[in-house]
Amino acid sequence: MRFPLRLKFFVFAVILAIGPLALVGQNLTQLTRDELKSAANEDLTTVAAELRTAFDNTFEGRWLTPLMVIRNGVDSNALGVPQKVSLLTLGLQELPQVVALQLSVEGSDLPILVTNEDYAARLAQAGLDPVATLSTGADLIDAIAGTGQFGRPVVSRLEETGDWLATLALPLETQIAGRQVTMAAKIDLSPLGEMVRRHPFAQRGEITVVDQSGRRVLIGAPEQLAQRRIVASTMPLIVAGARADTLESYARPDGTAMLGAYAFPDWFQWAVITELSEENAYAVVNAITRQILLVGLIGFAVAALGAVLFSRRLTRPILQIGRVAEQVREGNFAVRVQNVRSRDEIGDLADRINHMIAHLGERIELMKFVSAGTVSAIQRAEQAGMKRGGERRRVSVIFTDIRGYTEFSERVPPETVIEVLNQYFDVQSDIVQEHGGDIDKFIGDALVAVFEGEEMEARATACAVGITQAMVRLLEEHPEHELHVGIGVASGEVVMGAMGAHARMDFTVLGSTVNRAARLCSKAAPDQALVDLATREAVHLPDIDFEALEPITLKGYARPVPAFTARRAAAPHALSAE
Image (cartoon, one colour):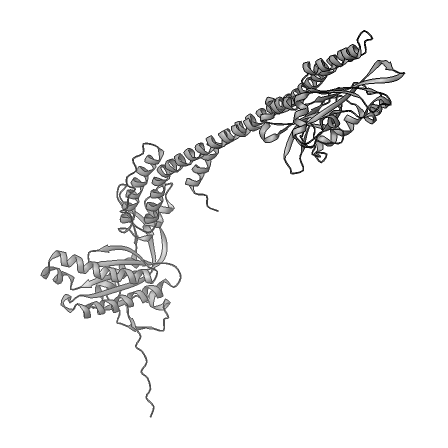
């Protein structure tokens, strides 16, 4: 799978920008979350304990103690009945939340009742009978006496007004006609509700007061909250009279994650529950997280933009170098890496690539001036270098020579001579390469080619015949040139290697076989290919015919040399049906 360099830079830059921020952000968030949880838990327990203490202090200090003072005054034998009634009336005036005081005689249905006039008027406006509503029945007093809960409040709610009232009873030592006298009081608990509503914690969390049955008290209707786990945890503790403050985390039925604490007032069968959702408790963490995400996004955007710009600037010259290398692979050595001005390793690479292409182009051009054998020899001798000398090999050698070239060069401009000569050599070179030969050199208007390997004689002969046919076709196309070709082919041992001076060598073939091919070429008539005996004996091609000639006297040879004319075999004539 290919992973582009630009993408690598992009991923690296993003990781570099986001990674440390994410790590620091995670650690910071976790630390802050732990601190906030600890602070929230402490706040929850503190608020619950404060309200528990406030409830107890309010009930005992503002209501119970003054009522006991009133009870003691009423219980005094020094006061007559009018003074005792006056004491009850004055007591109501000094205790605004005590809305009714009464004296009940055991077995009597006619208690002495004193009520708060303002509160009685409110009840009347609500359609209630103040006397019936505020009086404490004998059954309730008997129940309090039976449980020994004198001084303990019994809480109830007036549905018509929504007020929460506490009823408490205090026994008197004085008896009337041998019967027990009890002072009962009705207390409006709205100050306790106001404490809950106005507590600063209520602005960000919830404060709930529940009784032993799991109902909400003091604020609003007595809603059943036992389905909440924290409320269910408090119910058996209220009944058992436990007073241990507790802290716990839980989830509400709707899935909201909560932190909660509860405390139990001494004078009420209640639990004060303080609750805070984890979302609010960790609001600072969420804000920090959002800030980190925002900074992370900005960092990501900046890193991404920087990575894109930097990677483009970095990879553009690399991609350009790649495109140039591709064109060089296709043979275009004129191309160069352009507009790479960076003063770094990439700029150096671009310069080196340009120098390499220039030298490679020169080398390719130079290779056109040497044979494939020369190139192979140089490649084999890359480490040790070329050394003069040669080795014996068996090859077939072709010499071709253009007839009429001297006369042609005298009657046409030199430019035309070169153009036509190149045209003839192009055709001959293609045929040599087609038959697996290697052009050794060009000598004026002559061409020397060498064939090695299997069936070299057959390939050399077929090449020679092919060249003569091609030259005939060129003459038909350009009869004004009046150019023909003569070819000599010889096979045998030669010496092949580097020859010449130390500073200037030529990789070529030497020997009698080469000389014989050259001499045969000089004796060949226009458009004739002459081959020696060794070549003739090795070639058996059905499409080539050989014609034996009288032995030819060649320069440098003591006796005439056998020679044969090679030509394309004529196609057999079709027999006509009689």
